[in-house]
Image (cartoon, rainbow, N blue to C red; front, side, top):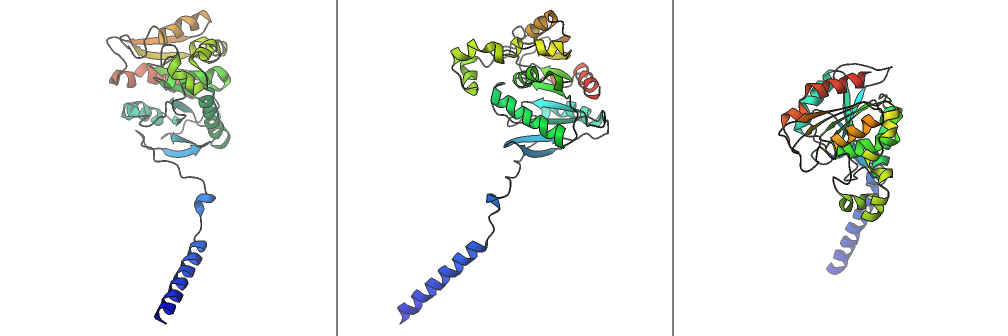
Length: 276
């Protein structure tokens, strides 16, 4: 008899537990995943675009351009970036009425997949959030590859480009062997297709659209050499009739020197063209 009572009690407990489990809602099956935590140097909003983490740092002052919000598009938005180095610049921009935004497209090295992620962010901000149709692109290091690669295909959607020791040449950095997997190609295939993907080979659309370029770059940078990147862009852009200025930071490499991130000329250039 005791065994019978124990068996009935166990069945009753299992039945109650099953009913309770069925009554619990399953939001993960229907709700969107929450935006990941994103530590920004200036307070902002983290959200998801096309399954990718993105952010917006809103402007503190109002400086509408044709009824829209002027903005700067920062890259790369990888883990830890933007970082404290950008705090001074971002504060100046937001105080001038300019928002900052970015999207994490991973180590895409300017590949078509990364460019598609950029287009998704552009559509989100311009079509649904009232942002200006022509942002200023700001590429730090390999963010130059990302922004310039997207700009070459969308020159009508760019106000200007500013770079902080920007990567402009896939051959120089990260090298074709390292970049090729992001393109779904072998190194040999990527070499053959460089004219379709390498920023220094795709400057003509930007020059025709009269997009101004400004870069600051150290003269002893061994990771992203000045000569193969910013100076090569300047030479080719001039030949195409474009406007490009390179500020050479003497005695500086690929580092966190404050002069790269607190440069008045770069800041004024970004503010001017974001507001224009």
